[in-house]
Each structure stands twice: as C-alpha cells, then as structure tokens.
Amino acid sequence: MRMNTTLAVAAALLVAGAAQPGATANSPAAKYDRNQCFYTKMVSGFAAPNEKTLYVRVGVKDVYRFDMFGRCPDIDWNQSLALVSRGSSWICNGMDAEVITHSPGIGRQNCPVSSMHKLTPEEIAALPKNAKP
Image 1 (cartoon, rainbow, N blue to C red):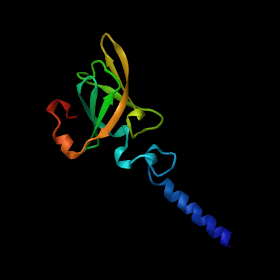
Image 2: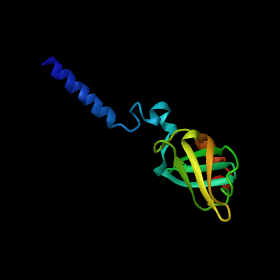
Image 3: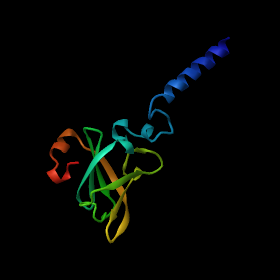
Image 4: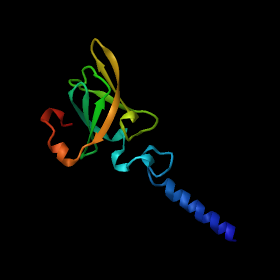
C-alpha cells in the first residue's frame, strides 16, 4: 500500500511540473531567468536604428535589444524580417537567435546575434523615436 501511495505522489508531482511552461530541466528557460526568455511567437514589432542593432517588441510592454556579430545589410530600412530561434522556440540569449532579412539585389541575409538584453522601462522610454519598435 505504501508503494502505491509513493508512486501516486510521484506521478502527481511529475504532472504538476510538466504543466508549468519552462519548468522542466530540458527547457532553455530553466537555465536562465524566465523573465529574460520569450517565445518567438510573442514578437509584435521591431525597429533597427542601424545595421548592427535591432530592437524587438515582445508582447505589449517588453523590448529587447539584439546586437549583431557584424553588419546586417539593410536591416535598418527593411520592412520585414524574421527572428529565428535555434534549437527551440525559446529565445533566452543572443546565441539562441538569428535575424533573417531579404534585400533587393543582395537576397537573403542570415545575421547571427552576438548578444541580447531585455530593456528596463527607463531604457525603453529613453530610446530615440527611430529605435522604438
């Protein structure tokens, strides 16, 4: 009887843990502060003030700054681009992401990201108009 009770409690804990997004040990969010991670589906806008910096709006209030490894041609005037996650649908740091853009005459450009930073409300407010997503 005791063995059955132990198994029932263990099964309940496993189910409860699986119900929490980002709670499993294999999830990228488990390795990082969950407040720094987001799903790619949550991206709602972007702005690029130059060819090395991209600001991405996630949901309604969060903004992340992505710094490219090098120049990402035409990212600063392009009307559409893709933010692709590597390995899973979570993006928790710069190495999890790649920016894909398409430019006339150049074609598709894959731009690796070197770093990512979630902006504070004060940093968002201080962004120049052309950098606000």
